[in-house]
Length: 275
Image 1: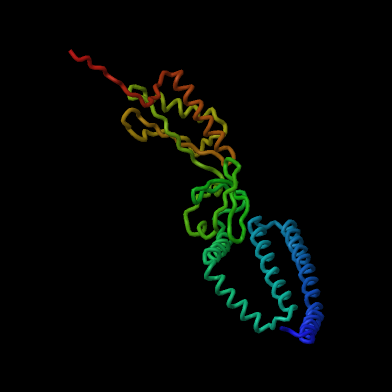
Image 2: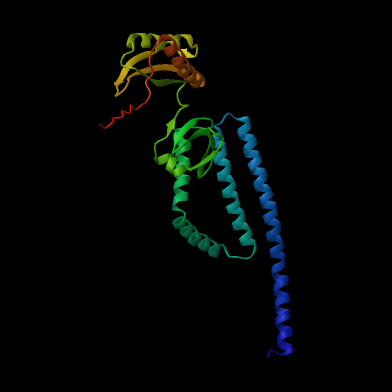
């Protein structure tokens, strides 16, 4: 059993300890609140700086994320130091924690390195339409660890930077013009020259299709049930899909008017009557 004197002594020690650490705790809380406000203000200043300068939006997003995390780590160290943790002990703790975190988050470190490589070599930038890792869409944001795409259906695809920097990426916005390739299957009994003339005339009638380089039509394949003509033309990036859809629709109308058959899969069933 604890005597009354021992109980009072423990209470006095606890009160004295509270009075000793209370100022440090209050200062640490104040430092944390003020520090978070300063971090927020610095990020706003960085954002305003990039708004005034003509920098890549991807670089802005990446640096803002990096600065925010770095400042919060520094703030954490200052708050812990304010609570009385010795600098040498803190360095040892951070070193051990860094090693453990580094081993546990090897993928995240790979993503960080991938983000740096993307910003350095610029295989794509914010606003480009890319295809990578089974996703396709407009680059919305490049962060420290991930790149965000807006897909055709307005869905958000989040791809790790490590995979993006180490795998194939198709950037459809990299060049000012694109070449389309449309396959037009016609029947074996149809006139190839006439079909070619129709396709080339469609390209002339569509103002968004470039005439230099000139459109061309070649026999791409003698398939099982059709002669596959390959139409190839160039269009500016912003006009590409309008030209593509126009050609697809007009091709059907004009082939029908000219009596050119467009084969489709069909099966003949013969009934044999037993005698």
